[in-house]
Amino acid sequence: MAVRYPIVPNRITVHIGTPSNNGRNISVPFVDYITNVASSEIYPTWPRNALIANIYAIISFTLNRIYNEWYRSKGYNFDITSSPVYDQAYTENRSIFENIENIVEEIFNNYVVKNNQIQPYFTTYCDGRNKTCNGLSQWGTVSLANQGKNPLQILQYYYGNDISIFENAPVGDNTQGYPGYEIGLGSAGNPVLAIQRDLRRIRKNYPAIPDINNTLGIYDQETVNAVKEFQRIFDLPVTGIVNKATWYKIKYLYTSVKKLSDITTEGLSKDEVTFLYTDKLEYGDTGIEVEYVHYYLDALGFLDQDIPRLPTNSIYNDNTIAMVKAFQQKYGLPVTGIFTYSDWQVLKNTYNKILKNIPKEYQDFASTLYPGYFLTRNMSGDDILRLQKLLLEICRKKKNIPGVRVNGTFDELTEKSIYKLQSLYGFDLNGIVGPLLWRKIVELSEENN
Image 1 (cartoon, rainbow, N blue to C red):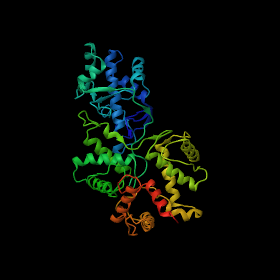
Image 2 (cartoon, rainbow, N blue to C red):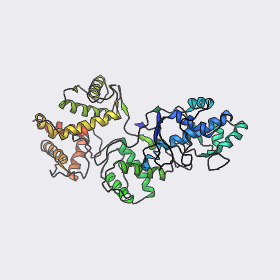
Image 3 (cartoon, rainbow, N blue to C red):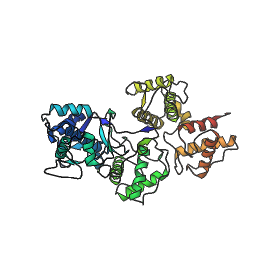
Image 4 (tube, rainbow, N blue to C red):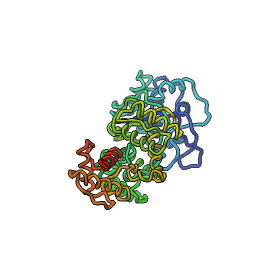
């Protein structure tokens, strides 16, 4: 499993002006942005502890905007604005103060958290003279520092004793939440888990949305029904498919109902950001994710001689690295031998393209190739027909496997056969056909042929 902790981005996109004006977007190193805002809003002559407390607030406020994709979920293509009315004061090409710059460099990847929550806390603040607010007073921090309070004590004075500083957060590229492709029936992975989690919470405020019981990260009919109702409620095209517009509308509602961008936040726990699928696989890793990668690479190697077909199992070993490197080299990815989420998307997309354009010399094998998505109850189409024909071959040979109707619909009889196969051959009992079970079904259908 992978815990999705917030990442401090190397760079952020700042919109010059208010959100809806026609100002430019500029890409700025995160450290430079924080230094600029701090130099614009606070005085370098203030006590060091006051400066540190204010800079923590600036960092945490910024990361809260980025982590919750506050503006992107509203249809904008930037992370934060330069307007202090909406966000914080950022002034292009302004001079900066050396002592402020030094503090930022020391603490830029530390931020404020509340209780045992994960997200950077929404550290709202104001100057404390011209404007007061339910948050930190910038001028008030000076008085508290002069009383001998340290930065954490100053922050706790304004935000409560249950806040702390999360230190040494990971630093990396700023990645958007939307995975870059539409998610629909049969999709699987962390993006599906995120959608299901968000819809379950939104449902508490909008009970017309059907519940989702599946916790496997597989986009099933329950998820389709929940997405369709969400789309109806919020005037989106009712497709049951999560495209970019639906993804960010769900994100916006989830952030709103949990008040993630509010000082009175409900917050995110570690469990809520722990997902089944890891972001990368490397030497020594084991488990079903490794087996999935092996399946797809082997299938790709069957059709592409540039990808070696080597003996594999459930362990990420030297053979895996050789296959992954060949795949990365072929498709212009960083050749590391470490399999990342980006590699996974390219591999699946490549596999799906091959399925649509199978070379003539491989047509005889087309019926045995995994369709590239999870097959679940109530699906219909040619891929379900292929599955049922394979199951029919098995039940003819093995009388303990229930028979099926070859009708192109994943119905109750088909599901019973799948459950029986899962029970007999050590698969999870979920009635869902993924690549590994598909491979087993193909093997069993070809036995004694």
